[in-house]
Amino acid sequence: MFQNVEQIKIMNPPVQLMPSPERSLESMTWTRRSQPELSLADREMSPEWSELGLENWVDSTRSMEDIKRSYEHLESVQLKMCCLSLSIFPPDSVIKKRPLIYWWIGECFVTSTQDRTAEETGEEIFRKLIASGLIQVQPHSALISVVVNSCTVHPWVRHMLVSLAKHAKLFNFDSRWPRMPCYNGDGSSTCRRAWEWLKKLKKVEVLQLGRWQNSASHHIEVEDEGFLKETLPPDISPLRNLTRFDISECYLLEAIPKGIEKLSSLQVLKGFVIGDLEGTSCRIGDHAQLRHLKRLSIHMGNQAEVQRGEFHKLKDIVSLRHLKLSWGVVSPNLKAKVAFQSLEFSFPPDLEKLDLQGIPLAHVPEWLNPVQLKKLKKLYIRGGELDSLDHGETDKWTVEILRLRHLNNLDIGLPKLKDEFPRLRYLEKINCHEIEKDRYDEDIVWSEDAGYTSI
Image (cartoon, rainbow, N blue to C red; front, side, top):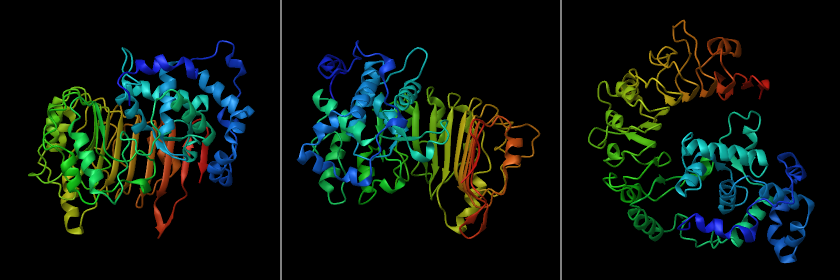
């Protein structure tokens, strides 16, 4: 984006990136609730507004002045840099929080401190931008504040951010901007350019391949998986500075490069694929060498071959705090094999979040119980065959956030859930227990603050 963040600090005064001394916080009236409502017609009129010169009128309105004050009163250059970065996203985008934070880390907008990791700092920046009203939580997440995974930027806020970012020369808003290539279905030449670009990333710290939009309808496609095999080098160990490696949206990928275990600085690994024994050069046990690994997602591919006792080695990744396990759709003749391979797991002692997607087991496995997961705070189960959560132990879960989605066989009510999970602060139960085709038990959203909501 630019070679040195200090450059933007020098550019700050002309665009008033620091708060104006004559304006106090008490004068700030712009909030999420006071954001101007814009109809669909208004949104579509933006080009016409430019032609008629109405943008100058918008800039002089009371609402726009309030928006500018909210920006000027952000407490640090760091907050302003992260806020200005949102100008690069297209209008009406729903932006996933995690890739956004990774981008901030990659650009050194947020860094680790003595007390916080870079991701924790990014989370705090995200919360502060929400509190300022300059970004909005996605509508369906707005009910309960503890679960916010994406955001949007109001068109008027974006208009201001684009103006400031242009003035500060933070971005080049030309559609041909090489730092944000668009992979269209028409062009192998674009893919070749991306390949050449990726091969030069010797000092990269954050590498993510995939979508930043929240909706799966925006997934990125290439003509064939050969592009991914060419893009990712056969040996990734030379990227020694890599701290975050995310290929979780690359659904065609059946194996990842060798050398993962040599990335000693790695903190986040998303999209680790277990394929056949020949195609999987790195096994789960190798991750124990990654002393700083905190987040890991593992996908069992269609050709997954799991070595006996391999999942027990998860417990050796002692730094791990967040773990996601997902199972691909397999043919009926492989279901029994995959289910058998999924019976044996052991987890690190300090695991705080477990996300299970497409679990192929009908009955609760021995490893899914509060005795083995004593420090678990978040449990997400989405899709799969589970028909109950009865683990057979007398111990109660320490889970505070529970999200259950698309579990056709799971029949469990709110009283039972609150009894099994006495520390719950937030609960989602969506599309569970299919009574008949496409008809389920009522959906539940509950929190200790907002109470019970049926949707």
